[in-house]
Structures are given as C-alpha cells and as structure tokens.
Image (tube, rainbow, N blue to C red; front, side, top):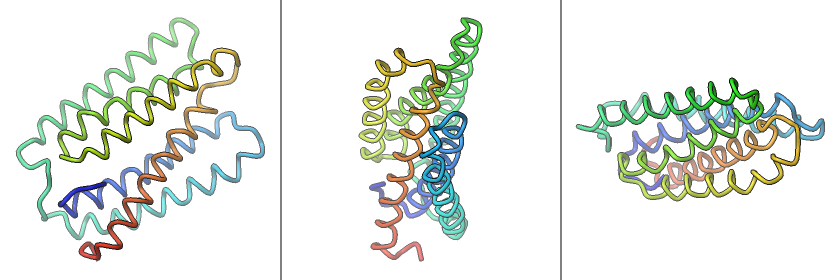
Amino acid sequence: MLTEFVRDQTFTVAWFGLMAFVWLGWSQEDPPPSWRKWLGLGSALGVALALGFGFLTARHWSDGTALDGRYHWFGVLVAVEVAAAGAGSAVLARRNAGRWTAWWVALVVALHFLPLAALLDDASIAVFGVLQCAGLLLLVGSLRRGDVTTSRHAGPLMGTSLLAYAAVSAALVALDGTAF
C-alpha cells in the first residue's frame, strides 16, 4: 500500500492477511493433496499478519485516515459488494452452477478494489484489483473444462495475491518504521 496514512497501511495489511486466511481456507474445500500443506502455511502467515498488524492498527486508530469524511461511501461500497456477491451466488445456486460461487465472489471482491483505491487515495490497490480480475478471467477456460469447484483455483489466486500484497505492505511499514 502506498499511502501517507499509517493507520490505513497497517489496517490494510491486517485485513488482507485475514482475507488471505479466508481465501486459502476456502481453497481447502477441494485441493489436490499436494497443495494442502502450502494452503495451511499461507493461512497461518495470513493470521500472523492479521494479528500483528491488527495490534499496530489499534495503536494508530486515532491517527488520520483517507476515509475521514468518506466513511458513508465506504459503507455504500461494502454494501454493494456484499449484495452483488450474494445475489450472484443465489443465481448460480438456482441454476445448479454453485461450483462457480467462489469464482464469482472473487470477481466481485477484485472489482471492488477499483473504487476502494479511490476512497483510500491509493492507486496500488486499483492495480492489484486489475491484476486479480485478469487472473480470474484467465482461469475461466480451464474452469469450464473441469468439474471441480472453482474454489480450487480462485481461492489460491485470491489468497496468495492478498498474502503477497500484505507482505509487501508489511515490509514497507517496517522500512518506514513510524508504525512501531
């Protein structure tokens, strides 16, 4: 994350770490056996980042944030994201295409990074969302040919990318040193 706000940076590391844990956990719905240890390791790293940077976020909670005066827009964005993910998942379930749920939710999450980048004044989040969308679109062909749940491929893509972004952001926080 490239921001002047320490609180935003530490929160993003913590949140992306937690979401890496969630996505890598969802990946464990139907993984090849050789992936299980790596998914578990990634999940553990995500939790470690979430806990460590969650603590730092609490220490900097009264610091400034790019969301000052825009919390309502953040709430609207999250509400739209949850509604789109839920509605799409319901449609997929009704069409007996529930195996596509993870891919759909991943696409909604990736797309929500575009307006989130504007709210947080951080273009790196938009680039991240575009890269995730591209990765998800590249998966479509192989997912259509297979009959496994899409969590097998969408989950690791989302989880590892979130973990990588969080790790790079954590390194930037450590290099800056002001959060500690």
